Image (tube, rainbow, N blue to C red):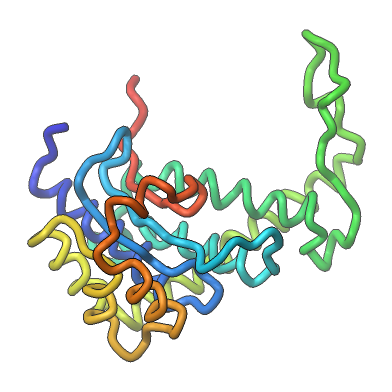
Length: 231
Protein backbone atom coordinates (compact mmCIF):
# COMPACT_ATOMS: atom_id res chain seq x y z
CA UNK A 1 0.00 0.00 0.00
CA UNK A 2 1.44 3.34 -1.07
CA UNK A 3 0.76 5.98 1.59
CA UNK A 4 1.60 9.67 1.27
CA UNK A 5 3.44 11.50 4.05
CA UNK A 6 0.27 13.44 4.86
CA UNK A 7 -1.76 10.25 5.12
CA UNK A 8 0.90 8.72 7.33
CA UNK A 9 0.66 11.73 9.66
CA UNK A 10 -3.14 11.43 9.83
CA UNK A 11 -2.88 7.71 10.60
CA UNK A 12 -0.29 8.36 13.33
CA UNK A 13 -2.59 10.81 15.11
CA UNK A 14 -5.60 8.55 14.55
CA UNK A 15 -3.89 5.60 16.23
CA UNK A 16 -2.41 7.91 18.85
CA UNK A 17 -5.94 8.94 19.82
CA UNK A 18 -6.97 5.31 20.33
CA UNK A 19 -3.79 4.54 22.28
CA UNK A 20 -3.96 7.56 24.59
CA UNK A 21 -7.60 7.01 25.52
CA UNK A 22 -6.93 3.29 25.94
CA UNK A 23 -4.26 4.19 28.47
CA UNK A 24 -6.15 6.92 30.34
CA UNK A 25 -9.55 5.27 30.75
CA UNK A 26 -9.85 3.05 33.85
CA UNK A 27 -11.98 0.26 32.38
CA UNK A 28 -10.33 0.08 28.94
CA UNK A 29 -8.23 -2.94 28.03
CA UNK A 30 -4.50 -2.11 28.31
CA UNK A 31 -2.79 -1.07 25.10
CA UNK A 32 -0.29 -3.70 23.98
CA UNK A 33 1.06 -2.23 20.75
CA UNK A 34 0.41 0.62 18.31
CA UNK A 35 1.55 0.56 14.70
CA UNK A 36 1.08 2.57 11.51
CA UNK A 37 2.42 -0.26 9.36
CA UNK A 38 -0.43 -1.38 7.04
CA UNK A 39 -1.84 -4.79 7.93
CA UNK A 40 -4.52 -6.28 5.70
CA UNK A 41 -7.08 -3.56 5.02
CA UNK A 42 -6.05 -1.61 8.12
CA UNK A 43 -3.60 1.23 7.56
CA UNK A 44 -2.80 1.29 11.27
CA UNK A 45 -3.69 -0.76 14.34
CA UNK A 46 -3.95 -0.18 18.08
CA UNK A 47 -3.92 -3.55 19.83
CA UNK A 48 -5.46 -3.90 23.28
CA UNK A 49 -4.80 -7.00 25.33
CA UNK A 50 -7.24 -8.19 28.03
CA UNK A 51 -5.67 -8.71 31.44
CA UNK A 52 -7.40 -12.04 31.93
CA UNK A 53 -10.18 -14.22 30.55
CA UNK A 54 -13.43 -12.51 31.49
CA UNK A 55 -16.86 -13.69 30.46
CA UNK A 56 -18.89 -10.70 31.67
CA UNK A 57 -18.18 -6.97 31.42
CA UNK A 58 -19.78 -4.07 33.33
CA UNK A 59 -21.43 -1.07 31.73
CA UNK A 60 -18.39 1.10 32.49
CA UNK A 61 -16.22 -1.21 30.39
CA UNK A 62 -18.46 -0.76 27.35
CA UNK A 63 -18.63 3.01 27.79
CA UNK A 64 -14.83 3.14 27.88
CA UNK A 65 -14.75 0.86 24.84
CA UNK A 66 -16.93 3.29 22.88
CA UNK A 67 -14.77 6.19 24.04
CA UNK A 68 -11.57 4.48 22.85
CA UNK A 69 -13.19 3.72 19.49
CA UNK A 70 -13.95 7.43 19.10
CA UNK A 71 -10.31 8.30 19.82
CA UNK A 72 -9.09 8.14 16.22
CA UNK A 73 -11.89 10.30 14.86
CA UNK A 74 -11.43 12.81 17.68
CA UNK A 75 -7.66 13.03 17.30
CA UNK A 76 -8.04 13.84 13.61
CA UNK A 77 -10.62 16.50 14.41
CA UNK A 78 -8.54 18.12 17.16
CA UNK A 79 -5.23 18.16 15.28
CA UNK A 80 -6.33 18.78 11.69
CA UNK A 81 -9.74 20.40 12.13
CA UNK A 82 -11.15 17.71 9.84
CA UNK A 83 -11.94 13.99 9.85
CA UNK A 84 -11.38 11.19 7.34
CA UNK A 85 -12.99 7.99 6.14
CA UNK A 86 -10.51 6.05 8.29
CA UNK A 87 -12.90 6.18 11.25
CA UNK A 88 -15.75 4.38 9.46
CA UNK A 89 -15.20 0.99 11.11
CA UNK A 90 -14.67 2.57 14.54
CA UNK A 91 -17.99 4.41 14.23
CA UNK A 92 -19.79 1.26 13.12
CA UNK A 93 -18.42 -0.83 16.00
CA UNK A 94 -19.17 1.92 18.57
CA UNK A 95 -22.74 2.21 17.29
CA UNK A 96 -23.24 -1.55 17.41
CA UNK A 97 -21.97 -1.70 21.00
CA UNK A 98 -24.28 1.15 22.05
CA UNK A 99 -27.26 -0.57 20.40
CA UNK A 100 -26.55 -3.84 22.20
CA UNK A 101 -26.23 -1.95 25.49
CA UNK A 102 -29.71 -0.54 24.94
CA UNK A 103 -31.46 -3.47 23.26
CA UNK A 104 -29.88 -6.55 24.82
CA UNK A 105 -28.05 -5.75 28.03
CA UNK A 106 -30.54 -3.49 29.85
CA UNK A 107 -27.96 -0.71 30.27
CA UNK A 108 -30.29 2.17 29.39
CA UNK A 109 -32.24 3.57 32.34
CA UNK A 110 -34.73 5.12 29.92
CA UNK A 111 -35.54 1.83 28.14
CA UNK A 112 -35.10 -0.37 31.19
CA UNK A 113 -34.52 -4.09 31.49
CA UNK A 114 -36.52 -5.12 28.45
CA UNK A 115 -35.01 -7.00 25.52
CA UNK A 116 -35.49 -5.18 22.23
CA UNK A 117 -33.20 -7.40 20.21
CA UNK A 118 -34.63 -8.96 17.09
CA UNK A 119 -34.84 -12.73 16.99
CA UNK A 120 -34.42 -13.58 13.33
CA UNK A 121 -33.92 -17.30 13.84
CA UNK A 122 -37.40 -18.07 12.52
CA UNK A 123 -37.49 -15.56 9.69
CA UNK A 124 -38.39 -17.36 6.46
CA UNK A 125 -36.20 -16.95 3.41
CA UNK A 126 -37.27 -13.89 1.43
CA UNK A 127 -39.12 -12.30 4.33
CA UNK A 128 -38.04 -8.83 5.35
CA UNK A 129 -35.96 -8.94 8.51
CA UNK A 130 -37.46 -5.62 9.60
CA UNK A 131 -40.85 -7.31 9.90
CA UNK A 132 -39.54 -9.31 12.88
CA UNK A 133 -39.41 -6.16 15.00
CA UNK A 134 -41.73 -6.53 17.94
CA UNK A 135 -41.94 -2.98 19.28
CA UNK A 136 -43.59 0.27 18.24
CA UNK A 137 -42.24 3.15 16.17
CA UNK A 138 -42.19 5.23 19.34
CA UNK A 139 -39.99 2.66 21.06
CA UNK A 140 -37.75 2.43 17.98
CA UNK A 141 -37.26 6.20 18.12
CA UNK A 142 -36.43 5.99 21.84
CA UNK A 143 -33.87 3.26 21.13
CA UNK A 144 -32.23 5.35 18.42
CA UNK A 145 -32.14 8.33 20.78
CA UNK A 146 -30.43 6.32 23.52
CA UNK A 147 -27.91 4.78 21.12
CA UNK A 148 -27.07 8.26 19.85
CA UNK A 149 -26.75 9.58 23.41
CA UNK A 150 -24.37 6.82 24.49
CA UNK A 151 -22.07 7.46 21.53
CA UNK A 152 -22.24 11.26 21.74
CA UNK A 153 -21.51 11.32 25.48
CA UNK A 154 -18.41 9.17 25.02
CA UNK A 155 -17.33 11.24 22.04
CA UNK A 156 -17.45 14.41 24.15
CA UNK A 157 -15.71 12.65 27.04
CA UNK A 158 -12.95 11.53 24.68
CA UNK A 159 -12.63 14.99 23.15
CA UNK A 160 -12.12 16.55 26.57
CA UNK A 161 -9.45 13.99 27.53
CA UNK A 162 -7.53 14.32 24.26
CA UNK A 163 -7.71 18.12 24.40
CA UNK A 164 -6.41 18.15 27.98
CA UNK A 165 -3.63 15.69 27.06
CA UNK A 166 -2.86 17.06 23.60
CA UNK A 167 0.89 17.24 24.26
CA UNK A 168 0.96 13.50 24.98
CA UNK A 169 -1.09 12.81 21.87
CA UNK A 170 1.45 14.71 19.80
CA UNK A 171 4.34 12.83 21.40
CA UNK A 172 2.71 9.47 20.64
CA UNK A 173 2.13 10.49 17.02
CA UNK A 174 5.72 11.72 16.71
CA UNK A 175 7.04 8.41 18.07
CA UNK A 176 4.91 6.51 15.56
CA UNK A 177 6.13 8.66 12.67
CA UNK A 178 9.72 8.01 13.72
CA UNK A 179 9.58 4.26 14.43
CA UNK A 180 6.18 3.19 12.99
CA UNK A 181 5.52 0.85 15.94
CA UNK A 182 5.57 1.45 19.69
CA UNK A 183 4.93 -1.02 22.49
CA UNK A 184 3.38 -0.68 25.93
CA UNK A 185 6.68 0.22 27.57
CA UNK A 186 7.36 3.15 25.25
CA UNK A 187 3.75 4.28 25.58
CA UNK A 188 4.25 4.19 29.35
CA UNK A 189 7.25 6.48 28.97
CA UNK A 190 5.17 8.99 27.01
CA UNK A 191 2.04 8.95 29.16
CA UNK A 192 3.99 8.70 32.41
CA UNK A 193 2.19 9.03 35.71
CA UNK A 194 -1.23 8.87 34.06
CA UNK A 195 -0.64 5.23 33.16
CA UNK A 196 -2.73 2.93 35.27
CA UNK A 197 -1.47 -0.02 37.29
CA UNK A 198 -3.11 -2.41 34.80
CA UNK A 199 -0.86 -0.99 32.07
CA UNK A 200 2.28 -1.52 34.16
CA UNK A 201 1.36 -5.19 34.64
CA UNK A 202 0.91 -5.69 30.91
CA UNK A 203 4.29 -4.06 30.17
CA UNK A 204 6.01 -6.57 32.45
CA UNK A 205 3.98 -9.55 31.26
CA UNK A 206 4.53 -9.04 27.54
CA UNK A 207 8.12 -7.80 27.30
CA UNK A 208 10.09 -9.75 24.69
CA UNK A 209 7.08 -11.71 23.40
CA UNK A 210 5.36 -9.27 21.07
CA UNK A 211 5.24 -11.42 17.95
CA UNK A 212 3.63 -14.37 19.71
CA UNK A 213 1.11 -12.24 21.57
CA UNK A 214 -0.22 -10.17 18.69
CA UNK A 215 -1.49 -13.14 16.70
CA UNK A 216 -3.55 -14.41 19.64
CA UNK A 217 -5.38 -11.13 20.16
CA UNK A 218 -9.12 -11.44 19.55
CA UNK A 219 -10.33 -9.01 16.87
CA UNK A 220 -12.63 -7.16 19.25
CA UNK A 221 -9.58 -5.82 21.07
CA UNK A 222 -8.06 -4.27 17.97
CA UNK A 223 -8.91 -0.83 16.65
CA UNK A 224 -7.52 0.31 13.34
CA UNK A 225 -7.51 3.05 10.75
CA UNK A 226 -9.21 1.62 7.68
CA UNK A 227 -9.24 3.11 4.20
CA UNK A 228 -12.38 4.20 2.40
CA UNK A 229 -14.21 1.40 0.57
CA UNK A 230 -13.56 1.13 -3.13
CA UNK A 231 -16.15 2.76 -5.35
